[in-house]
Length: 466
Image 1 (cartoon, rainbow, N blue to C red):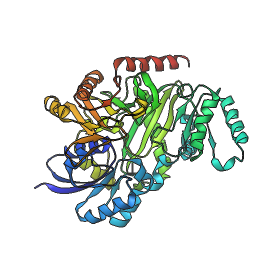
Image 2: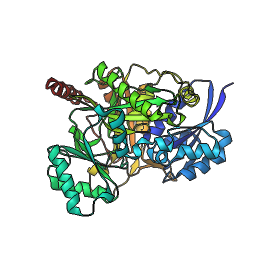
Image 3: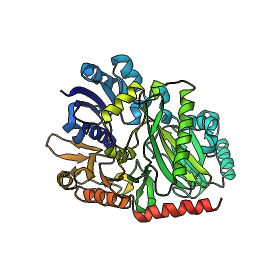
Image 4: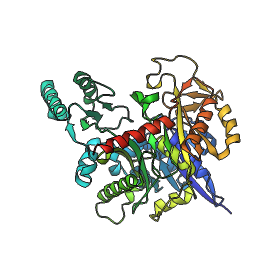
């Protein structure tokens, strides 16, 4: 008889659907029951949940109350979005209910401060740190003094910097010289739009190709997941503002086409040093279990540099990985909790994630006042033809009382294509996107061969200059 397992999933967006989907594919040893604390009435989560509660602000104490009311039926929980992790969801739920959580504890929510990240990296991995300068709000008494300090740092780097808020902004608060502004006055305007509510860090603009590195952790060790490539900019050809991510791809191998195996080994070595620094010499640091290291690397002529580090699954990057996970994800979760995780295997398949988003997302339209109803029946019907090669994960979408589903303000739904090559996976993902009925738009070049060829040529050219 199958063992009953109850699982809490704290959800915002498509990555939670990918987690539930991966858990649902576990073998016949488990009779699974999901308890979902959700930001909205996500139709995928509603379909799979035994109990579902909507908590629009994902307040940690309201989630705790939901868990407490069901704690005798829940074996463990997984938190997907960053906000509750930063606010201490693991600390609160484990202390008040005894339910173990798969996510880092509050003090290891490393994405809570970009400044703290840079200072830590300066100690453990200085070679992976770009040059940077911190501007704290309480250190400047006049605007002239602040501006003079900014200009002095810009002189050091010939204005080639990225402007970042200290606190998380879902990838949307970052401005980069040459991409988002081309004059110092434009840069200063962006700087001041952040400085009113957060300390600001200026970082050396890095030239190279980006990869996303994620790792499961049981407190004793980190187990790396395959690399992925995220597309942050809103429009094709990497134009437009930064978004939460318009899509991503994963190659058949654990590293990306523009990388070498040596690049991958360098990533793992740097991640290991960061993990050891976080552990502080302890044999086991249970507060780190989950995905404590989701690192955005930039591969430059000098080697791998770190753009930022997060302490939760990537969105869209985790959607590339979980559909090709081999083995039983429930078992993997139990091993993370027990501290016995040693390795994780993946199918040798490529995956491409493409997001469809609302008309007014990313500045595609300034306003959209039309119908926001979205019908996924066409793409669900297509899944019967593609089988396991196509996944559909609703994100910022809700099911309403009239039985219809509607797009909300952020990324609406993603399709995941799985294939023997990136190009095959891309075509499957786009086939799915075309079958979605609704006023949505998407990038068409996620994982495109010309984009990958450009990345390969660009990194080769950079490294030829060494």
